[in-house]
Image 1 (spheres, rainbow, N blue to C red):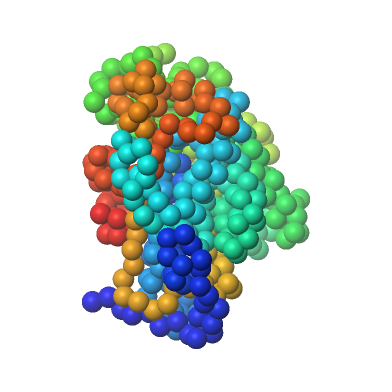
Image 2: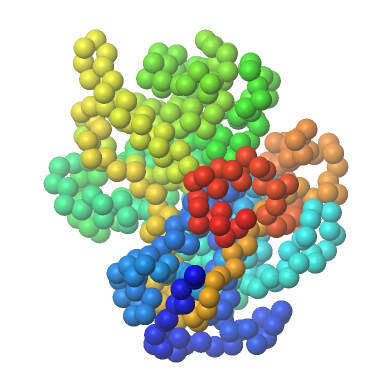
Length: 455
């Protein structure tokens, strides 16, 4: 039996009527919370929001009470799957296009309609605009947060936006509070997020405010292909293959920064089922292999820098990465135990108590506190509505702009102009056809709250 949520009158005192186009009598506090990401990875953030129990629902004060803090809230989640990965746009010289896509995501959550399917020429589905927005994507936060803030300022209805980067940084330094000796923080994020410098700037700025600027160093690692592999992009992983293929976009064997190093193959310790081929033709072919490659690359980068200070935390700066946190933790333990020539190579530069920081929980807490401050928590009710939407290629697109799998071609995706009136995609509801059975199974296995609410 579901529990009713009792919210004190103090928190409900500020309810007022929202004059939205769909229903002018809808109370603003009853509008949904909007969450978006470049794909399904942001469901790791939604999972933390849905299951958060850090506050007493009767008083609003800190302290778990056995009832989810957002139990009375409705949610709209958007996965911009057709346009992912966001982390590649900057390296392709398309940061303005990325910013335009982020604004399109925001406008969808602020809007009142959606397409029933990719073939519709005008949206027939009806929805409510969101009352607060969470950008669950690190890259979208890095490049588009200020644009979304400007968009909301023009609306002048008080809608706020929360990004993941500040929450992740504050959580990291909170976890390391009291550390007396110099330490390093690793940032594992998409190439676009790393290129923006947003995490390093925010980390060093926050550290300075806490009097830690001279103690903290930052190790940045671009997660080459990691998010794409988690989202089973066929250009990065294809479980049906048994041999290397043309069209592979993941890391190749070589000496450059984004390459698999032949000298480190025993360190990566790839599972034989997670790679295709061998030697110079080796290709990564599982999300776990991408996780191992990128974590080892981060630690190797730190070792090569020669500071000798221990890594005390690694921020998982992409919502897709927590799906592989068990792999990352296992790989880290292997690195601490790794010996060469009878000597430990990595043990001294990896703190025994190193923590992985998933910013999602702290985003959830910030969202709750913001709703309380603005008196926008939903009125007591039983149950909640959680809806998932995903972008797909428009059915009207010429077949030459699509891959064999029906996805946007790389050339079209990153060749579009940011001023285009139509980016060639539509936002439609989650379904077996739009998210895929494999992705759905992964969500069921790893994100129980999302699975129970969405499917």
